Image (cartoon, rainbow, N blue to C red; front, top):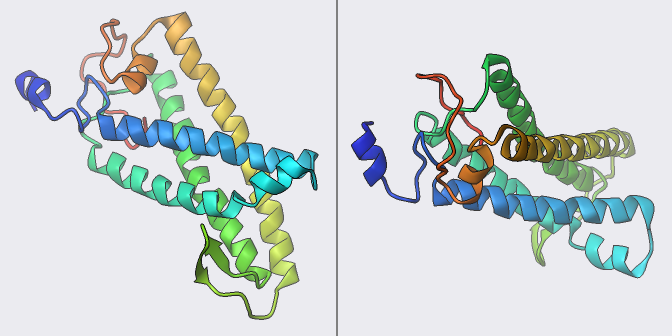
Length: 208
């Protein structure tokens, strides 16, 4: 795609110079929902049986389903934009590390809620999302499977939280330390800051 075509591209889609509205909306919607979800998990772990925990954790599995659905849609959208997204900034090792780190984030985004649903089903609870029963209760609980899946779900959940904190810190370093356009592209789309990526750098890939 030429520079003229990039300039005339729909604001909904990504180009090598900016993230489009769809990518940015997916990013920030999921960011807000994940912060909420991690808050419910933290309350369940450190303040169980409190009024606030009971209120918020009652939405935990429905919110997990919402996050999983949006996460799958986001990955599909990013994959369709693979050749048009802005490349990562920095030298080769930083670009490689950014790609690996964000692939891990996407994998955890899908795996953590999916394991939560396996946990519910293995306990015989079924699956109800925002009041709509998708899988009815019943069946013989499998306590061994539930114990294993529950442990992995929690472990990966806290791993996910750790990667999110690292992701935020790195984004702030890019913005305030390196003063490159990485964060501005995800906040407002385009940035006037100079890029330090080499000419012909590969796209950011499935991530943003």
